[in-house]
Amino acid sequence: MKYLEAIRNDNEESEVEVTCRRSGKKESESAIIEVRKGFLKIQEVCIGCDDISCSITHQHPLFDGGLCKGCKDSLTESLFAFGEDGTGVYCCVCSGGGELFVCDSEDCNRAYCTMCIGLYLSEAALKQIRAKSPWLCFLCTPYTSTGTTHGYLKPKKDWQKNLVIFYDTGYRIEKPNLSYLSTENPKPIRVLSLFDGIGTGKLVLDELGIEAEVFFSSEIDEDAILVTAVHHGSSVQQIGDIRNLDEAQLKKLCPIDLVIGGSPCNDFSLVNYARKGFDGTGILFFYFYDVLKTIQNLCRDRHVFWLYENVASMKLQYKNVISSFLRCEPAIWDAKYFTPQRRVRYFWGNIPGMYSTPVTAQRGFDVSLGSSLFPNCNRKPTVQHLHCVRSGSRSLLQGKNEDIFPVSMNGKEDSIWISELEGIFGFPAHYTDVGNLPQTRRQGLLARAWSVPVIKHLLKPLQQYFKSTSSDEDE
Image (cartoon, rainbow, N blue to C red; front, top):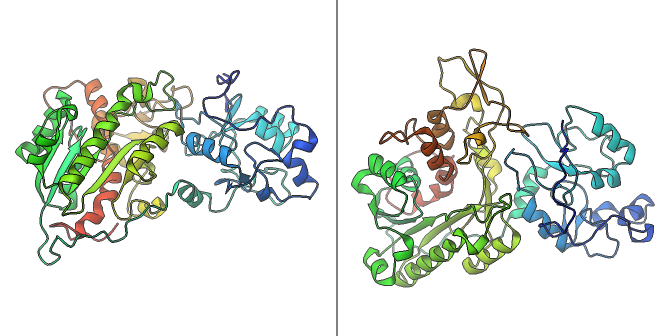
């Protein structure tokens, strides 16, 4: 079925704050009634809460209609919250829960609550949608001028770009002050990678041709350290647990040109109902912040580039705390622009161009799942994109019930091979195949890793500031 039989836990107040309730609203309180009467335009009312008294501060990124500040904040928090089955957890119109219809397009999987469908179309349309299978949502079917197919949920023609603008911070550094560097004789880069994982940062710099004078790695997972050692050897210097890095130790590492890292995301993720936020592993963000500020203070004579990453499906209050400390809002990037996997992440930082639109980033990339499967084995994809890969074995299965194998081989169902998964993340095949690591642990390492093409795209501008052997043209 294309709609969720199970009702989200919405009997109590939703964890995504919705400022106004639309149920039981009198006609004089309903904004959409005023639109139907011709007294107001849809852009002048909040389609998130349908409250006639609220002020419009933003326009909805997907559909014609406004948003009040509370609904904008709620939508910002929930729009990229996908459950373990890869489907939307909250309504993409109002960010509410309840009974949700989910688009059957594997490239969409957005959810719509029955209240929005009933309000902005009709109860008759609600019955028709309930009986239709498969069902493609209002963004995935052409809009007709009669309004019979979409009602008041008219999709914007450029909604993909609107999503970028919706999350855009306006925080940019076009040309940072790098007067201490010689443009005629650029120097190699000095890097500090926190929560380094399996050496993604070093791999990316190597692929970009940016020469690293030194690459310091702070990592505690023994499997990850082993993988990094096998591939990068002494070019990566392990410096231990970030929690043990004090000012005296950091001073020995300086000068540093680039600080990168992404602390564990599990206790931030909106779809993890057992999340502990900053009371759990989320507290490690503050260690990143402390190290970054210490490095900046120790390197006052130079510009320190930095990049911090974490999951996009976090509660707004967590994002606001992180943004407050880092003094900028995050850019949002999805691995789907580069690979056959949806992997939406927030990135805070000061890398030139990191807040630009990802729409142009897709050029030159084959993002079909078939391109990542091993040839000569008659392996065929059954889906176009994988949903976000996690450490659990069932996360490699697809569909709303995690019952679809993503690959068929010789006509039989099959899962993604770990070596193929490495390719989807942008790593060379067998990158994690070291030390007789079992497949489950290799998958866990990849699930905690960065998407190589995304990081490569974000760090590519550094080629113009540091010694580089790459002559590749811009992507």
